[in-house]
Length: 121
Ligand code: SF4
Ligand SMILES: [Zn+2]
Image 1 (spheres, rainbow, N blue to C red):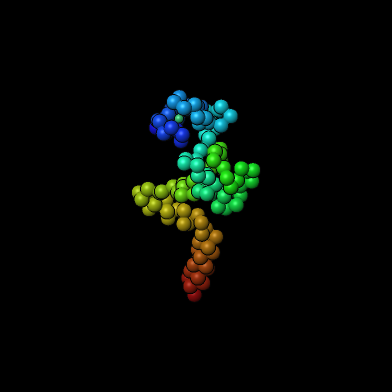
Image 2: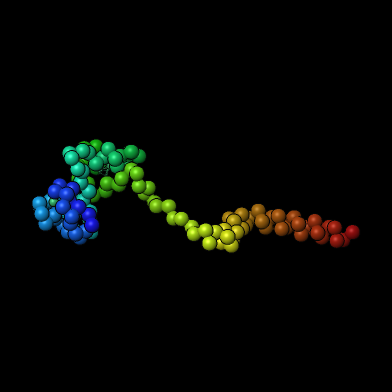
């Protein structure tokens, strides 16, 4: 269960405001828009991925203490999807053949040509 950044009390993940201190937890009063807030008067931008890659153009940057787009630097934007080891065998071979299908086709053509030349003698 998430906690309020201001009073540290546990709050419902859908709560728009903290029921204990009335701190806004969602932006624009919409339960679907998370409002990230800094704790202890620090800046969110210091640990935001969009500040690091210099793609943020929000006016509150680099001193944002609350932001709807904050993304923690330590968490990758696109989570890695681990392929189960049981699916790497045959699927891995099929993927390899699909990826290099042009080279495989050329290799097969060369082998077929060599076979034809050798068999005609
Ligand atoms: S997205 Fe928000 S927290 Fe991140 S750099 Fe921009 S203003 Fe700062
Ligand atoms: Zn609170």
